[in-house]
Image (tube, rainbow, N blue to C red; front, side):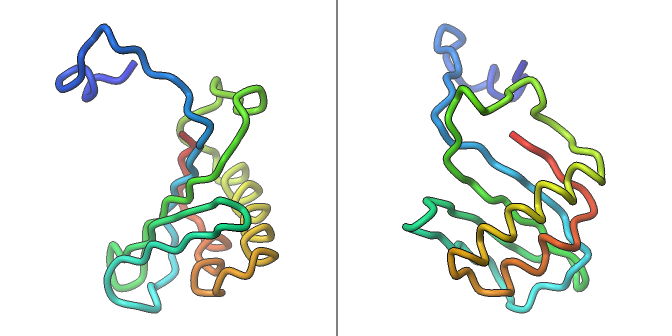
Length: 117
């Protein structure tokens, strides 16, 4: 159920999984740069947005392809601290292997709150 969507979108149009999922997190890790960063990878087809929310915290969203048959849509939503830590550490390993800069990997190890959509 998407109450905000119902205010703006045609109710006859149903949401359809597009093959991309997103992990979002808040990290107790200061941003190394001012402003918003939009890193991406043509190798793994990941893309992301990182932005500071305070002097010692940043928010990030990492979007990546995921086949519908393994998307596990029933578990979308808030993740426990342990589950968020596990998912983001695996994701950090993939990003490191793909050559992402450490400034985008470090916050993944400091996640305080995570959401999967």
